[in-house]
Image 1: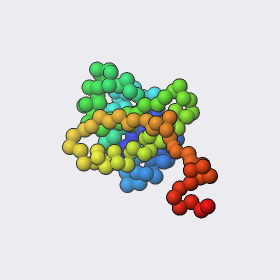
Image 2: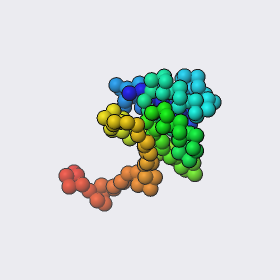
Image 3: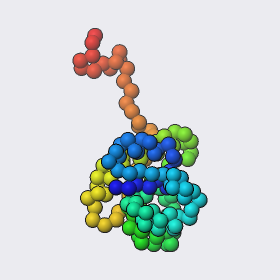
Length: 145
């Protein structure tokens, strides 16, 4: 599949996505010199350019009648994600992690889909990112003593 990352998707996610989606073509809108192109034209040109998926942080697109119509007309799988701006760089890292971890199984589902899909990637949980254990206080079963 050909995947286009919209202008509002941080360019830093491009290389990790290329690694986890090796058999797919992933490109950022900036590489196409489409920066500042209006969304309606991006959708049209991405579709006619052979892209099947667009990834965006623009959640408001589905609240706009013209953009919703353009998404439908484009036939592109529309993948959006949220980012918590109140968390600053931490929010950005969580959003990027959510995108990279969701895309491989998501692309597999989209390849099997009959018709186009609207997708919302949920963010990683900022309150429970990992478990931390002190092996002195709570050693695993086979921890050397």
